Amino acid sequence: MRYVENPQLVLGEDKIARIQFDPRSRDDIPQLLMGLQHLYLTPSLREQVFAILETAIPPEVDPSNGRPGMELWKVLVLGSLRLTLNCDYDRVHELANNHKTLRQMLGHGWLDDEYQYSLQTVKDNLRLLTPELLDRINQVVVKAGHRALKKSPADVLKGRCDSFVVETDVHYPTDITLLFDASRQVIERTAKRYIPLGRTEWRQSAYQVRQLKRRVREIEKLKRSKCGPGVQQAAHQLELREAHAAYIAHVNLLLDKAQSSVAELRAEPHVAHDELQVIEEFMAHAHRQASQIMERVLWEQVIPHEEKVFSVYEPHTEWISKGKAGVPVELGLKVCVMEDQHGFILHHQVMVKSQDVDVAQEMVQQTQARFAQLRACSFDQGFHSPTNQQALRGLLDCVILPKRGKLSQEERVYQQAEAFVQGRRRHAAVESAINALEVHGLDICPDHGLDGFKRYVALAVVSRNLQKLGAILQGRARHALRRADARKRAA
Image 1: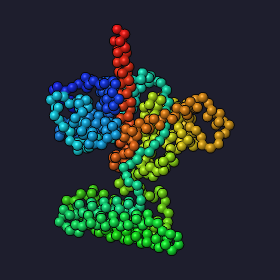
Image 2: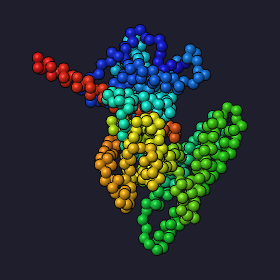
Image 3: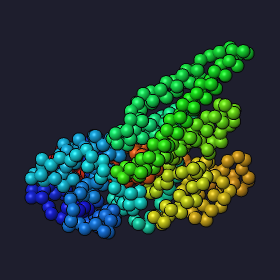
Image 4: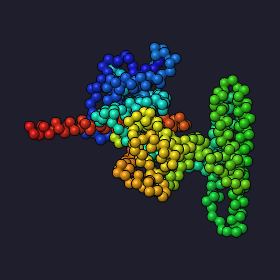
């Protein structure tokens, strides 16, 4: 049983319309809640948002049966709060139980003032919103922001497009540590399923993990050690290869044992096959890493970059080197964002195994499908290609896309035009939007899996636009307060 909003109002429930905010507050929470309050109190916006949230309820679910679930309005409020504050579930849990204004926004009145959320309830429900659903809500929020700025729906939108890296929550990868991660998961998960059956084959699983860790430390110590040229260096290389060979042999013995154990567990009626499939996936990771170590160290071959995996826990992680000063490499995925001249994020795209040049046309097309008023857009040189130049000029009235290399006379005239120069100067403002997204959650993604990554990014975009909407409303209230103070002083 789940609702967008509980139709049975609690006696004494505080109306969201009565929530008062301090216009002078500089904190993030009032801005976010003012944006949410605007959505709730504007009938047309509320109907759109609630209709979108209703799509998250499966059609076969009967709202009148089953145990009560968290209302989807509360899920949206708490999810956007998590990204706005860039906090973990523990802080969201604490605020949901003890922050007075937030609890009013969640719909708690004086009769249910003692109601407390459990931490696991918060964790489970905040994962319900899908990237597609959040994208539709984002369109409603952006259009609400434009109306709050008193912009006509026919006004031309000018976009700024750029990409940045959202890191995944992984450690720095080396082939031996990745092999250890995969092997440790195989050992621990197999023992967890095997020991409750009364079998003793994996009773020393913790000791086996420590033995593997010891071999990893020995190899790392050998890599850091220094030796002279000639015979000493040859002996050191031989010792290093022998240590790698012993490590791989030890891992292979444990993997063979685990393979036999998984085959036996499949015959047990009370063992979930989903968990066994996870073990087999980690075994595949371990076999791949062991093979790559043998190729690199023992056979002195170069591993192609596309065959490398940089995390066994987050396999979608990519090795990204953007050439930034002091940041030689970032581990995560690139995210492309389209910002308008008013500071709202119109659209975003998670770039999986693609570069800036590959998504330029798609970003403009998808943004125009959501906001047909987009008629101009600026990019940096990373998005340039002759194909993009030609295609984008067919989609937009004004394309600010600097070309790499030497310019022809025609291209030089085009890039010296007033509109091009002004657009290129204003393009740097997109870095402010990127910095705001990173500050409010998109510095590193703590959620697991590619689906969790996409959901986290989509929620960050919605939260940022809600906060931007709230900031506009707060600025308007602050201006009205200043005028009222001025009239009092004049009187």
